[in-house]
Image 1 (cartoon, rainbow, N blue to C red):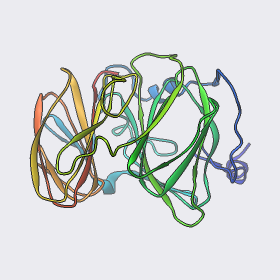
Image 2: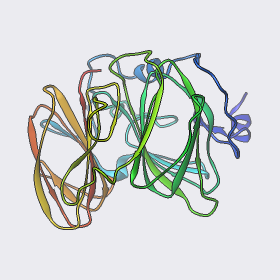
Image 3: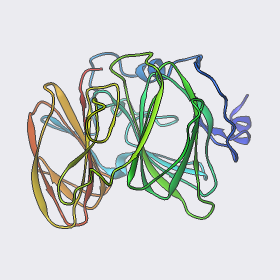
Image 4: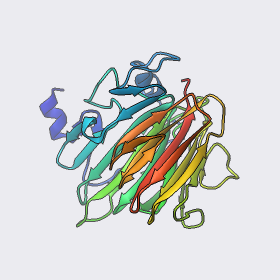
Length: 292
């Protein structure tokens, strides 16, 4: 099948799109090539590639340097190499492999497709996202919620903009798991109970009993939403971890580096760092192991 045939069928750059979801019920999904293996190929083990900007223990990714693909129905910016975007200096940060900033046109989305051995986190920013999967889950997630899917031994799922009028915007984050071939699972929660103004609050951890959702990895995610100028310190939870910070809105200074909307910074080899946020800023901190 040539590229024109793929486009006609709604598959571009490895991303599937259809106009109506068709689910396949399956307890176990077998992929011809595992997501884990496919995404590991350009990495190698225990290797942290050079980045676009490096300063001591920091790597900086400005919003304007991200990969970009506009398929009409999907407008996506890639912090790390993904689909048709490949940059050997921008493959991953520790076990953080994918950070996509996606906008889906009204009434369209990702048709049914498989995943395995990946921890997939979705954070809606605007609009609504409809999810269906082979485990029997059907749900709509909105801004102010977080969704997590442990693909494990394999699943099929689809993601659609539930609105026929408004675009849907969300962050999709893929993290390599601590262990492979776990039982697939799905979770989705509102963040009202944990959200705090003008301070960081936890939205993800390795522990099912902690605040937020949990994944099969020694990772902790925090969000901060600021309506006034605020300074605070972040202390890492585990030795050897690093933190990737992504500015969703506004302007912040992290460890002395000024960052604007959609800029990102990875910080390693430090137990703590400072965050200075301006009014109107929103930031996501992802603490993750640095060894894949």
